[in-house]
Structure formats: structure tokens, C-alpha cells
Image (cartoon, rainbow, N blue to C red; front, top):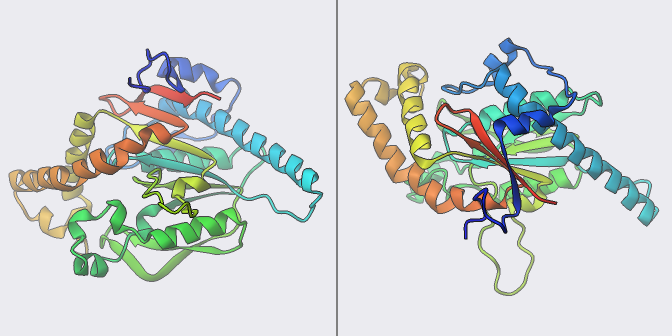
Length: 319
């Protein structure tokens, strides 16, 4: 039984085509311009204003309803405990999915749309890249070929960060990652100070981890999420997008002498493509099959993309 099949009787999801989903926009205003979308989208991602209208405005409206419901429940619980000094914790949205599938674009577009709601909430965005173990440690532990796999992250730091956010602590620090040097930047942090909404994006954020045998409480990242989104696409398409992105980067960012991948820009096109295929097959495809895709059914919302990199189907978990 495939519970993610639209025809499956026992699926916990409701399924909508992109056109059906776009009708749920109602009167949600378009608050982004074409130039802003160009700035927000990632390399090789064709999202434009039409895609924002089709998909993201309805999603913004849905998330607004969830945030308002969370705020109402908080007020009711505060009255229940007769504790007026309790502070509302941030609403956390988790975004998961494979490399090259468009998570970063989705996260950035949502951040801008949510921050422009009439209530003007404070919205922050953090990715899990900064919580990767430094390359020095990965090399020492022979994990460089497993970078991006669950064991390559500082899970303790991830949990401490999210715990601090969900405890409504002020000035919670997150480490910063450089895609240029392909490493965590030593001593550099970004501070998150009690946002109304936090978007937390990363490939493995929905993974539960190992369950304890003795019944002790072991928190998972997703335990801190109020809403979870999974960006989905057929494996063959993600493979194609990954190779295309690598070859584009070879002509752009990799040409920077300071880039970790600068050596690839010096190779012939065929040699560079062979490297990209190897990285996909030996690292990213394994991670997708072993760790990322198995978490898809844990999401509240699944955005499935088609060959044109645009969303074709939306699956929303039933209430």
C-alpha cells in the first residue's frame, strides 16, 4: 500500500494539482516583484512570479491559518494555567528534500512572503549547513565522503539550537557555513532573537534517528517543528538537476580560486561531468535513498515537482 498515491483509499493526504491548489489563494496579495524573485531563486531554479501565484500564495495563506491557530491555542493555554507571564514560542517550519531539488528557493520565497503578512511578523531563516562538523573533523573521522549524511552533523548543537528557539530564549546562536570554502566558518555565528516564525531548512531535518530502548526521551529535530514541508521530485529528475547545477557552477562559482571546488573548473567538460556523476552516485543518491526520501511521509505538506522544475502536485496531510 502506497499512502502517497493519490488514488490510495487510506492515504493520510489530500492531493491537488497545481491548478487546483492555486485556487486556494483567495485574496492573498502578491507582495513580491519579479526582480525580487530573481534575487531569491537559486541557480538553475526557474521559479518566477507565475509560480509564486500558482503555489506560494496559497501556501502562505495556509501557513497564516496555522500560525493564527497556534497563537489562539497559546492564549487559551495561558488562560488555562492563569499564567500571563508565559511567552509565546516561535512557530517553526521545517523544509526537507534532496540536494538540487529547490529547498533553498522555497525557503527564501516563503520567508519574504510570510514577513509581508499584514501583521508584519519577524521571520528568520536558518539552514542546517552551519551545523555540519568542520572538515577537519570529517577528515579525521573519515566522513568527508559522507558529508550531508546524518552522522556528519553536530546533532547536539542542532538540538541545543532548536531547544533554545522553542524555549523563547533571546539571542540564540547558529554557526555559519561557507559554500565557497565548503566548510563551517570558525568563530562566526548568526544570532536569532525570538522571531515570530523560524524557517529551518535542510536535507535531513525530518529524520527521526535511533529510538532508545530504555524509554528515555530522545528529541528529534522534527519534534520542534509546528509544520513540515518536503520538496519532492522523481529521482531521475533530481539527478539531472544536480548534474546541470554542477556544470553551471563549474563555469561560475568554481572559477573563484578560493573555492573548494576550484580544481573542477580546470577540467575538461567530460572530465567534470564524470566527477559530478560520481559525486551523485556515491554520495547524494545514497543519501537520498537511505536518509532523505524515507522521511517524506512525515511531512505535513509535500510539494512535488515535474520535469520543468515547477510544482505539479501538492499533498496536504488531512486533519
